[in-house]
Length: 306
Ligand SMILES: [Zn+2]
Image (tube, rainbow, N blue to C red; front, side, top):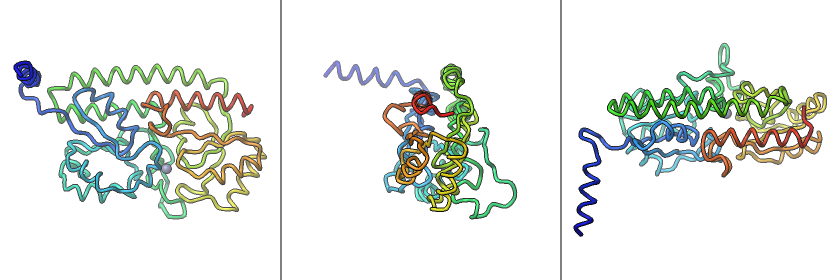
């Protein structure tokens, strides 16, 4: 008992004077949670709403998410309307002023990221369902991952000024880890520059631009629109014309159409996770790229894709 009391007192003393406890962070995706964990270290707790093996455009809203948001100090979102189909009512129903858009605890991670495919002119439904504000899968460029981390560090420092030095140190360590990774990934893929691929959804433009893949088409006719017979026939013809050997699909899409296209073209279907948690090996942000780059290099070698 004496020992217990001593431990209890030690635990209390270890909380520095003026400390407000750990920041309770909720992120919409596991990618953001991973980056947040690196930056926040032991000064925060973080939980992601969507799992990495789910389509982040279409997440089933559960009451438990509202409870998480009620207790959150900070909410970090991918933005660019990625979560528009499911997040706004959850935020609203949480009645937590801190995490409402514009609130002190709300962070849109896309603020300083480089965003591709921003539509010029008027946006119409004919352009597809889900990317009206540019491509929201920007975390798949590690340079954007570093920008996200910087914004997260700034937000944490704003909320917990006493811990600024900790967040800055963690940010520097994460940035160095990503930089080392980028060197490795670029070197691994350098011999296969401009390899032609098809992807299911427009998840990988940032990845392709950074690492030199040439995406010549998509299984979806438009973002968020399921495959149609005519589009599939056109895609098969184009793949044959350009001799495309790889079809990359995200883990949450039906492989029926991709498999049919593969049979018609002699290409191979590769399930490539766009998110941390998409496969069990993708345990964190850096591990995701390690996994995807290894997967691609192996597939390119195996199929002789060019
Ligand atoms: Zn998308």
